[in-house]
Length: 270
Length: 270
Image (cartoon, rainbow over all chains, first blue to last red):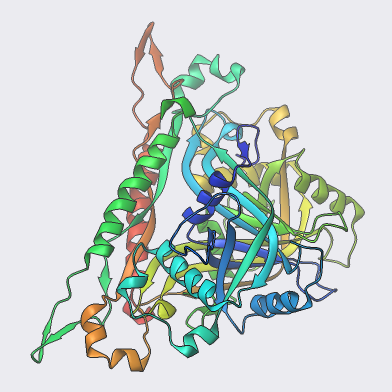
C-alpha cells in the first residue's frame, strides 16, 4: 500500500507536470518559517495555476517550458509577507531571487486492489515543484493571473462576474509568482500486479477479487444562494443556472469519469 | 478567491482534525532535508491515518486525544531512512524525539460562486498537523497500523485479502508514527457572501448567478483485473464483485454526495 513504489513512473516533461498542477483544485505549499527555533516546515492549502505570461499576447495560453506557478493570497497573510520581503531583499543569483517554496499537487484516479495488502496501491498523478516565489508587482500580469486562477476553478467564470476588481480588491489580493527551479511528476496507472507465488495460489485467487475502483471528482447540482434572484417589474423570478456553469459541470463530469476509467488500463490500452 | 480568508473557521478539537485526516485519501508530508544547502522543504504524497493503539485492546478505535498519525512507506525511501535515523538518535526532550514533520490533509466540498471573483471561495476542510516521526518497531503495533491503513482506503479490505503479510513484506514495509506536537483545522462552509455595494447593484444581481456547486469524490464501477477469475472444475467463471466492495461504493457515494450538499448550507441548517 504505497505511493512511492516501483510501479509509479517518474516524469520530467513540462506538459505533464503543469497539467497535473492545473488539474488539482488545491495545492499544498511548503516553506521554511523564519523562526530559527521552528523545526517544522509550514504547509498551506492554496489556489494556483501554471501559465506563461506574455505581455504582448496575454490571451495566449502555454503550460510548456517557461511557465511559472501563480499562487493567490491575501496581502496580510504570513506567506505573502514573507514573499514580499524575499522579493525586496533580492537575494540569490539570477533566477534564484525570492522565497524558496515547494508545491505539491496530487490527484487520485483509482484504488488498485490486489491479492495482498502489500500490493494494493493507488492510480494517481502527483507533481512536486520547487522554486522561488516573488510578489507580482506588474498590474497587468496581476490581473491576468487573477483572471486565470478564477477560470481554472470554473471555466469562463471571470467574464460572467463583476469585473474588473475594485482598487481595494486589487490592494488586498496578492499574487505570488514561483519561478520553477526543479519539478517532477509521479504517475501510477493500470491494473494490480501481484507476486508470482500468490498468483499460483488457486484458493487465494478464487477468494480475493482484484482490479481497480476508478475514483473521480463530481460536480453536483448547483445550489442557488439566498441572494441570487432576478427582479423584474417588482417580481422575483427564479434564476436559471447559466450555460457557462452547466457546460462546465457536464464537460468536467464526463471528462473526469472517463479519465479514471482509462487509467485503470495500461498505457497502450487508451 | 482564497482559502485563508476570514470566513474559514479555525478548529482545534481532536475529533475534527483527526476526522479530516482520515477522510483524505492522500496526505502531503513535509520535512526538512538533511542537506544544509537545500533551501526547499521536501513534500511527499503519502497514505496514513490517525488512531490510538491500545495493546490491551487493539480493536478499539479512537480518533480522540492521544491518537497518533501513522504513515506507510518502503524501508528504502529517504523519509523512512531519515525517520529511522532520528528514532535511533533519540534527540529532543520527552515527546519530541524523532523527525520533525508537517502533514496536511485537505478535502474540497464545493465551489462557492459569488458576484465578484474576489468573493469566490471553496467550501473545504483542511487539517495541518506538526509532530515527531518515529519508526514503529513493535510488531503488533506495526501489523495493527498496516491493517488500519488498508481498511481506511477500503472498509474491510484487509480481511478479504491474503493476510498475514510474509516476512519479506513485513521487512520491506515501514510504518512511521507521528506524535502530534500541534494541530489545527480550517473549515469553510455555506453560501457565498458578497459585499454590500455589489448586493445593491440590481443590474449585477440580475446578471450573475451565485451559489454553491457541491464537489465530491465518486467511486465508479469496479474494473476486474486480468488475473481475477474463478476456476471451477477446469472452467473459468466470472468473478462477481464481492459485497465488502459494493457496500463500500454504495455507502461512500451516498455519504460523500450528501456531505457536499449539506456543506452548501450554513451550520444551523444541517
